[in-house]
Each structure stands twice: as C-alpha cells, then as structure tokens.
Image (cartoon, rainbow, N blue to C red; front, side):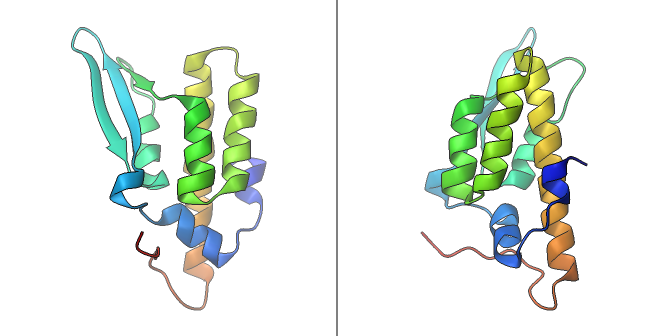
Length: 131
C-alpha cells in the first residue's frame, strides 16, 4: 500500500470514498479492446473505478486522468486522493504506467476506507446526501 493509503482517514471521508455519487455526477471511463475499439461506460464510485482501471492483458483503460482527479476532488469529496492522483500522473513516464499507478492508488484508498469503517464504532454502510 502507498503512503496515502496508510494515512489515517476520518469516518466521513471514508464514507464519501465508498459511497456512490449522484447519477448526474457519473465519471466517463472506457476500455480500448482491439479489434473491437473503445467500450464506453461510467462509474459512480471509487470502488467501481478500481474495477474499471484494473490491468488487463489485452486492453487499456480509457480515462482522462486530469479530469479524473477533478472528479475525485469535487464529486467524490476526497481532495487528498485527488492530489495523489495528480502526482502519480505527473511523474508517470507513459499513459499506461499512469493508469497502473492510479489504479494502485484507488485500490489502496478504497481498502483504507473500508478498514476505517470496519473499525469505526458505528456506520459500516457508506451514506451520501441526495443531490
């Protein structure tokens, strides 16, 4: 796990990380699958994003990584996670390596949020205000 995932999360941030955003705030993702082309979809949570970004041997995630950081900060409500994504994208030597680094960050952030909620005295279910 990376240092961001090891940093303690408060319960409210953990809930935001695990909760789904409103339908209108979905983030577009894609998957380039030769010879089919780009398969488009959307995600509503960092958990779904973790799944969408997982490395596959014959495909490549199609994600606008700069916009992703803005979505994580604004729609999800995780500025620290967004900053880590921006840092990972900035230092990655290629798009594919940036996607891999971002996947690991998201995976670790989601795991840390789950651990925070499991150890919290109350509230294991992510909750988000309707909006």
